[in-house]
Length: 200
Image (tube, rainbow, N blue to C red; front, side):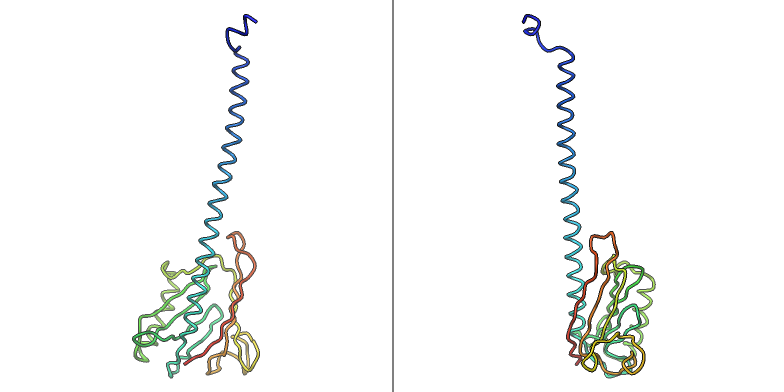
């Protein structure tokens, strides 16, 4: 009883310190896991919001589709994306969507008024995309892109051969976009969007 009244032994202090350090380590692990979960959730939310913005822009471009009444078709496809002319406040705009190296890219021209400007801007847009201008990157983590056109009351690949191929002069009545997501970026599977086209 006398020895106990004088205080704790060294062994008791060490055991208490060990117990407290174990509890602190467990608490830190829990806080760290919570912080990482929150960070991952925020990244997913940001990514999903960006994807929604990209799809909304894609739909806006197609809703404003405008025929230039020139040799340049209002909507054309090259296997990796599409080129379109859209209505702008001061004329026409040329827009190019393209899938390159796992990223979806978008380029737009200023407002145009002449056929020559349309042709020049088309070449400029392809050059900008070829140079991988970072400002044009819309979304990362895309492994595949497919476009289907609604012609003659049926869906077909926009690049299908024969009568329904890319040489058709008129714009399709609808577009189906299928995006395949690459693994490891938080999004998996594919996204399909369909939009009715009313080219002016």
